Image 1 (cartoon, rainbow, N blue to C red):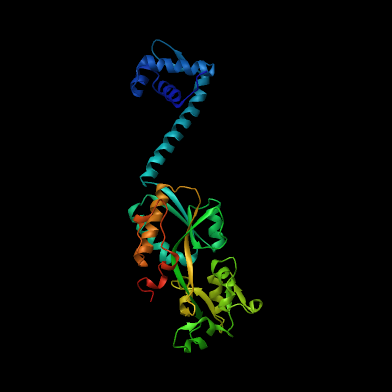
Image 2: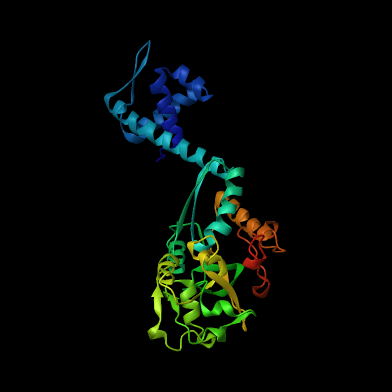
Length: 332
């Protein structure tokens, strides 16, 4: 038994539109005998007569007229979908979805998006922000194409590619006693000061909680907690307390009104990752956006690797060679 194909639908629609086998055959660039045979096959397969033939015109039967609306929609949807695929492959149109922690949006993602938009103005982009947990889960569920965040849950189905190192420092009101220290501020200098921690569903809060040797959490139950840098800003405004954050969490945010000093002994760096789903290929649009992101990191943070090194995702520097936030122009 023959199967009905798009060829049968196109032949049916052409005859219905023109009312003539001769005109329909010319439109489809085939012989009239081939077109007639295709329509006969279609009629035999569905068990219905589709056209009444007169000496002057070919007219659809009542059943065929009802079916014509369906056939037109199937053909239009198929042709549109194929056209969209071709346009996407050339990045003439399409959509890319990204999730990122807020600290990565202004200094990393925004310049990358600007570069990408200049090259591919027809691509629309969705950007959602949130803590590391939200970013990872958005990638895991397919809600976004990729994420930019530190590693929190370390999901087995995700790939974490380190792209940037962001140094931790202490944040405090300008009149705080720490402001009087002229040398590099050490982690041990923070002992005894009231501390506001970030929640553990953020990559920053989880990292600091998991490293008690840094000396921040001897009395963890006594510490204030903030769920985001927005709430942290409100709490620091009350005065007298400090917090610890990576540098890019401070730059460009309201938190920059406070004093930020990088911490030493030891120097600790947040590892920022490009997060993707394992065994999932990027669309051409997404790959080009990732290339723009990697180029932004390479140029602004003096990374020696370039997007040309990308293998349909990206290639990162070794962990101890990650570009640092403080190496970008204007970040000194």
